[in-house]
Image (cartoon, rainbow, N blue to C red; front, side, top):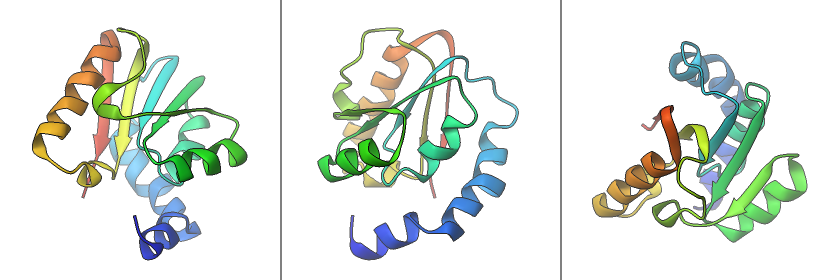
Length: 133
């Protein structure tokens, strides 16, 4: 990421767009269940808002700087790791989500691996949801 990306993604304006536009469009008709994984929370705007919607949230972030920041700012389990090789057991989550982060995954092969890992850690009947621009 770069400074402009960080500034935009940490802004109140972005948080309002997520709260009033992105989340209703993607999540309002879904039941993510009780144990949700967010892949790639970045600066945590989506994480903070997700935590208001689900009983238990875990976030998986690859960037160590963001992990440290999120651990200081949020009362959510933040795990440092790669979504293409998730450090979770099979069928760990009732829901897996990712928002506006797939464009940061550098190749189609790694994106495919991320999706395979999301399926692996989902419980049978679980929900995968997300969006990207």
